[in-house]
Length: 295
Image (tube, rainbow, N blue to C red):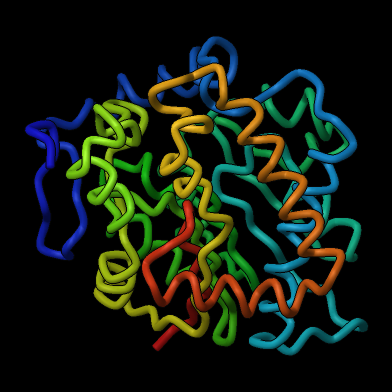
């Protein structure tokens, strides 16, 4: 698909030439949140956007409840690896969980959920995960939300997270659905002129459903539930909303996504999850969301 990528033994694409660990850490600590305009980290969010963040977490929490016995009298432990702006930390803290977060920088959390800063450990995420492993930490839920695509060695961190899961714990992984059937179709039919999802340096791995399941299986994890999400790529079939060829339409497409996702959630979060399971089975949706437990 692109000379920058190759297909690995798990069946998903990755960069042929990866950055060094030192360069990657510097990027996230000093540049990614603060200076990169395409990360999605904004200074101010609308009420609709904040509702969207909460709704997406609530949908995942419903799946978690089905997989993990949650005893209200027992303190459950939550770890957010790459906690970003702290939306997950805040949601689980509000549910009464004992929460911990890891990130290269506290920038996002400080600006959006400063009340969670005390739960965040900054620095090299991968080193801090290994510190938790050495301490034999155990967590009932581990959140890996749009992180794995940035990792130099995804199998290594998955093996470590397997060690950190409690016996019946759940690892939630969300990654972009890249090099997908929709994207191939759009390129082949010249509806788009470039592989817009390829972001060298920031994104190192480009997952699909089968590739994610394969690498997680290698790490000793079995998928218990799988969902997609809103298929914003379908906007590219319409030349009036083709945000790749006409970047000025991007904001409107994003706002449409927020409105539709919130609308679907208001109808029923359970039925929305069912819809997104169907999309995942078809390889559709901009994201792949998997829930894993130990084999």
